[in-house]
Amino acid sequence: MTPYRNLSSDLSRIANKVSAGERISDEECLTLFNEGSVGLVGALANEIKERWHGNKVYFNRNFHIEPTNVCVFSCQFCAYSRLYANREEGWELSIEQMLHLVKRYDGKPVTEVHIVGGVHPKMDLAFFSELLQAIKSHRPSLHIKAFTAVEYDYMFRKAKVSVQEGLRRLMEAGLDSIPGGGAEIFAPAIRQQICADKVDAEGWLAIHRTAHEMGLPSNATMLYGHIESFEDRIDHMRRLRELQDQTRGFNTFIPLKFRNKDNDMSHVKESTLIEDMRLYAIARIYLDNFSHLKSYWPMLGRQNAQLSLSFGVDDIDGTIDDSTKIYSMAGSEEQHPTLSTEQLVHLIRQAKRDPIERDTLYNVVNDFSTPAN
Image (cartoon, rainbow, N blue to C red; front, top):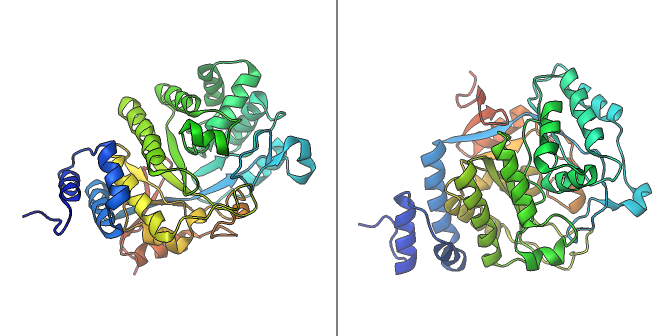
């Protein structure tokens, strides 16, 4: 007897494929977007999540550094950046200022610093190499996850070096992994409307491919809930799935919810919570070669991130410690994003899951699955 009853023949066939651990096609993914109820896709995604990770939910102790919000690009969805021509409205941190931010965590058990920001013409390859060297000299064990493919593309073109050479220099300076930002939506027609002047899909994928080939792991993102179609989402995830088949270099997939505050797309209605949960679940079902699916709680909100743990998510990021402005400036649920380790553990336990502190590469640091007596 089929485990999923009262479904159309198409949905029943897809559900049974997923339960059997088989890959679904683009057409079947579109059927889930068009016809799959939030209950159905949530159940399927949770089945996959538990097959991969049992009852575990991961988090890490991290903080962010945002070197600048001054940027040469003008993405329509961005409420964070200030154009270089109007840079007096933004901030620009020196290497000394950023090293001071790192030193604030001396003696604290953080394992990762996440460095991303605007694309500033004067913050070049030499500048960032010096920054990474300074951080590693001060705290060698701190994992540096830094710069999006958008930043790399500009940085390397300005320095007139290949992607491989640029990454080699930064790895020698201390770079340990790459975040997934800047992917937005790969579909050219949509990208032309929302972020026409920055690196295209092929460029983004090429940078991550090169990183993987050099032994540098990375993450992947997708900005959803704006003007993209279901087909655009599937196209985006298909390109990621194909690259992951080839390199196995992605750690996790992170859907990022579009927020419409204080940007040039304020007229676009945001997705509903049900739409968010369906997206997470379908991403978990489709991206069968990604070990992890992350719900970025500062963007989604801590309660909604907690809910996502029933829709295929096994990671809710980290402590953050109020060290990011990128999403709070865009109207995210969390205007002052910080959670202590104890709060994260409690949030995960409330969802009847087992909290596991990880490092950036998903090695277990602390197992909080058994409450302290």
